[in-house]
Image (cartoon, rainbow, N blue to C red; front, side, top):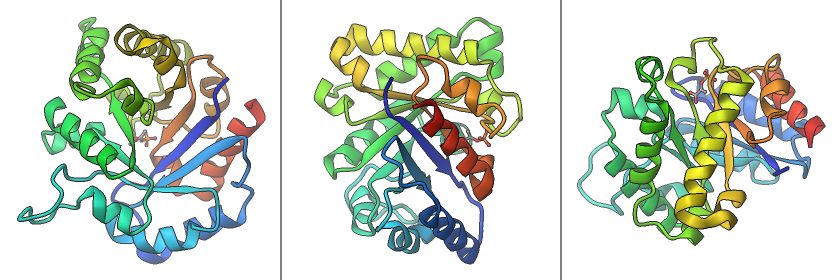
Length: 254
Ligand code: PEP
């Protein structure tokens, strides 16, 4: 069993004070277990403060997105080097909200992953099918394309730096979690693709998180699946107790 990685995607939520309180709570609680990795992904404007609060803890801090260029006339965007500069170690790339609302393509996501790696950030690449794609029996095709195009041109060594998050779009923020079996099946499919393209060693190294309405009640069953190596948690990561309960569930299973 791999070390589980529990990540909290705070999205465009919280005030600065609330974000700092949440970070302090995570810092003070026993999130410093070596048994699991924990990370939080606040909004850009909170990153520096949250990095300062958590830098003595083992909780990773990352951004929810970045731009693929190093610097220049890209109004409103943030580069990987800027994220490193404020203390981030991770970045989420290709979240379904970025793909859907901001029209990010697999090609853009691929450029962002390369840019993140080149400045020492560990990307979490999100993949997942929409409800209509699942209903049409296209889950494998969609996820296969997202992986193939998203990881194009990366070496196996680079791919080992990544975490993949399988997040069925129909399960995000809806309360409709994939069943543990559904999730495990797609995770196994993802690992098979990684193995066929990049070898068994790479496929076995990579952690595949499940995301989509994970909470303290369903975490045990989901995280107990053999192919699930952690969770990317949205809504439940805003409540310290819920998030910590998920973390402790991962510690118990380790
Ligand atoms: C997410 O946005 O990555 C997510 C999984 O959200 P939620 O847990 O709220 O479904």
